[in-house]
Length: 96
Image (cartoon, rainbow, N blue to C red):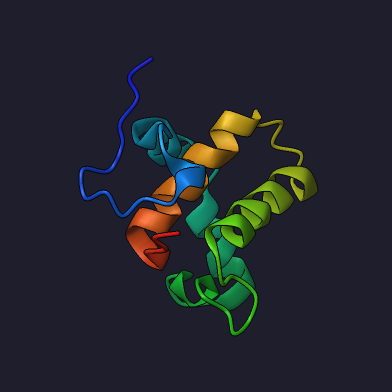
């Protein structure tokens, strides 16, 4: 397993050591964008940063875990963290 981390140093401790390549792969395999499109329309990106819901790295990881549970994805904790780390890198940009 290859572990890829952020070189910027702005990665929240919760996501240090997360395997970003694995996160990207799991997001694609589980068709997260398609599910988000069904929920909010358009390209699905409106689901990111809903007012007051996701305001920390911990709440982001919790939301990914919620999807894991509700959709019975059977992801391991490190897979949930990898997916959340990718979402943070691409959409949320939490540093703590």
